[in-house]
Image (cartoon, rainbow, N blue to C red; front, side, top):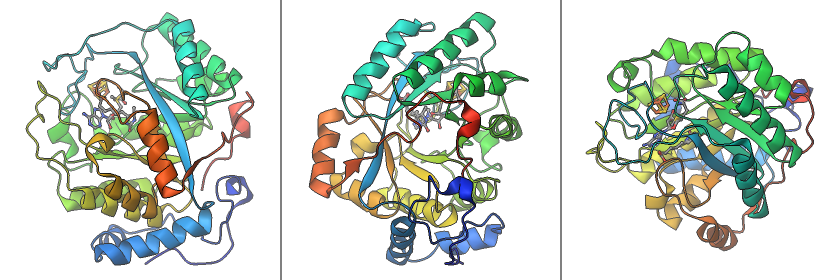
Length: 352
Ligand code: SAM
Ligand code: DTB
Ligand code: SF4
């Protein structure tokens, strides 16, 4: 059930899979995924750690900084989200930030050691042409700083992915969040298939796809398996898969959800690593409530990327100093930027 061991990566993936001896598969069945997911946890972690070591240099962690460039008043009703206009979370709404301010924040993040800068906007999608032009300027500015640029702007319409690619965007974040059967219980204003269509648009324009989900929404193990199955059968595999633990926010419908079991998070990460060997698996929201030991297990299980800094979008995060000290304790070092020069997005390796 695990990926077969033979050196068959396509050349376009060699940048990602530097020590690759694992062939990525796209033909997983949902039963394959369930069989992997439901193994005894330590067997799963053991296999995932071996695949991780075979594909990525040991001890490297990608450090991503995150900034909300437009906050709150979102038309969508995603049940977990503090930024939905349908909910009553105590956040300070803010219209699109100025390009200079965003680039100053990117420069600060770079000085702290981040190599990827991710901008998120509380939009159904970029609808205002002037705002979209500003985001393109932000992308160009981030690339000119020598950082990788990622954006999470919601649903993309015709031609927008190509414009983002031309500006040099390295990755487009659009999470599927959960399995298709559970998705309608989480969000009512758009569909799972609409999310998939945007992912296809981004991939079609040659932008790396960053797509993952959230654990702790009330989904079943089967819903997690279904999400992982859909991600692992995308061609190519996503460039990154963020695994978020729900951060319950007062005023949202999911505020009362019980805390995520860290072992479930580790199980999802290890399964993702086995299914998509060359993908960056990002231990994303929810690290503030994870012990250093649980984070260490997640890194062993194949997580090789984090959001670092004092804040996620509207909720606090671990902070630079805490992360530096954890990395020192674990012998992890920051991964250099892969796409440091502002080249056209078509030169970016497409993943697996
Ligand atoms: N509006 C855009 C969209 O929906 O794609 C971009 C921003 S949205 C906040 C990006 C992602 O953040 C969501 O898809 C979800 O996976 C994650 N997220 C948002 N709120 C969260 C929370 N409270 N806990 C965990 N993850 C969350
Ligand atoms: C992702 O998967 N997680 C990030 C980023 N992509 C945009 C967002 C996490 C948000 C956590 C809740 C908040 O701070 O509002
Ligand atoms: Fe809006 Fe994105 Fe939040 Fe959904 S997740 S409410 S689309 S900001």
